[in-house]
Amino acid sequence: MNRRRFHKALLFFLASIFFIPRRGLGNSDTGPSYRKQENTAVGSGAKKGLATGNAMGKHSNVDEHAQKTSRVIRVQSSDIIMKDFQPANYLDFIDSEKLNKVLEEGLIKLTGKKDIKSAWLDILKNYQSGDKIAIKPNFNSINHGLAYTITSPQLINAVVKQLVEIVEVKPQNIYVYDLCKEINHDIVRKSIHYPVQYVERMDNRTLIEKIKNRLRYGPASADRSAEIEMRETILSEAGRRLQCYNPKVIVQAQHLINMPLLTNHIYIVNSGAMKNHYGTVRFSNNESYPVSLHGPVLNKSITDINRNPHIKNKTRIIIADGIFGVFDRGEGPGKQPWKTFNNEFPKSIFLSRDPVAIDSVMASFVARERKSRKLAVLSHDYLEEATRNGLGVNDYHPDGRSFTKIKYEEMYV
Image (cartoon, helix red, strand yellow):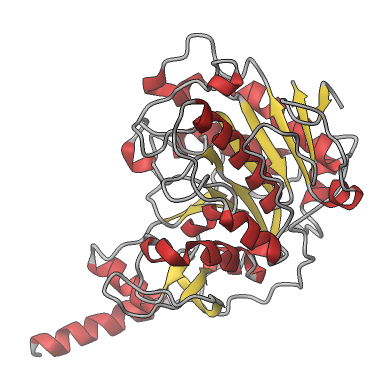
């Protein structure tokens, strides 16, 4: 047998292994059929220590419809970061028990329910036993170790803990994914105390990875039946046109929980809930990192990704990590207290069902902090673009004015 025939036989052998049917998220492009999802990208609802309005002022002229559909709650706790905090090992100084309480109180407030189980069942519309839940954190800086900030594994663990222990979701039906990065054990996995599934970056470094990518095998791969319609022409670095797809991990999930970070961005004012899905998109050239979605196509790309039905209709809630927050991404590593939070860290989480509303609130906080330090405040055009396309309500106020188009509330736990 010559070399060419041997490689061909090897490829067919490996392909036959890959296509053995398996349970769970898996192998077919179409995946199992999923029931029609109610559009719950925005939601409603109305316990303790509530402060309405902005930390910099009270509400005025609040639109009544926006109050019902676009609420953002910031839950803050002065005890969430331990007193002996050391930046070099910042994740070790998050009080997990306090964080779980902060999350619980915030969800009850957001939904207006009397207890946390009722709150979660309100969030997970039409949840049925066996449903798959995908969780998308922001692990963009994980390859830098602890020098930069990521969505805290402790916050992810709090979400998983409540899903498993209160809603009785089986851990194997929970998928924590970020397709731009490998999900490190020492930084992330050791802090999530349940046997959830991890779906991570898949490169072409080994023969097995190349074959998996070519055969579109596994939950990290593109589902070619779930193309994301893009209004702009997306080009690879080589100048070739690309198609964008949803990955199987969210195509075959029934519920999506978005867990972004309170952070600025090097091209736009912030990288919140909507841009977090740059770590979701799969490309026709099997590229792992979304370089092609930046530049002139950025504003429309953010909107087009988030209005795709698999993301828009399955997103149940956005739980944003603002414990430390980042206002100086691009200016250097480290953890710095915020001037606009009394020279402390924000020590907060943000909750909403409206991705535009929560992004506009977090962008406002980032812009105010950067202005206070005479740092450049970048474009917020993507927020307007998202609003024009029906994704939510933009209430961006970088000047410290109150939020007036949405209902913004603060809680202290």
